[in-house]
Length: 254
Image (cartoon, rainbow, N blue to C red; front, side):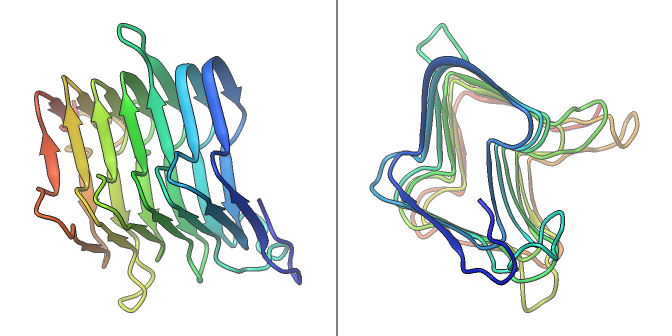
């Protein structure tokens, strides 16, 4: 979705937008790309995208939310926004099967080439994965993250659901699981505001965020990063921010 210069914002109001059951899908580019004046409103509490069984292979990001994109003279320059009553992405498979998501880019990226920056508000989780195998980036050549919130972007959850949920799943991310960073100024921080926990992993979930991009022996990359003037607010609950039960983490570069 995109809005040209001199036009109003492009708007989408929808319940569940994507559902795939047992399908194998290959996407050249991003699955969802909401840029320059795109406004998405989710109606209801169900997931915006639900993928059950099968696989998705992507040469870009699963979601890009960005302003002033590739050719900023063409866009209207209004900050894109997504507001959903439920979860953005739900992945699942029935054991012993696995759902496979293989992305050359990030799973979720909120970025901007100048202000105003994008915003995303969720009533549920950003990603909920059960019996899924997820990869983001290439550990031999880059440090792409699973999820990135930068350039003054804001991501907010309003309910008690965790931002990221992994049940019997694995994540291989070249640059970490989540970074909130690259604030354009002290007055416009990249911001993550949570109504519930940040991260919950259960039932043997595994995570590998090592990367060779910075050279052998380099300590890359951290699971979670809040830096460069960014803000993490919450959670507004009694639950721990990060929760892991019977899970495995590898976060040091080889």
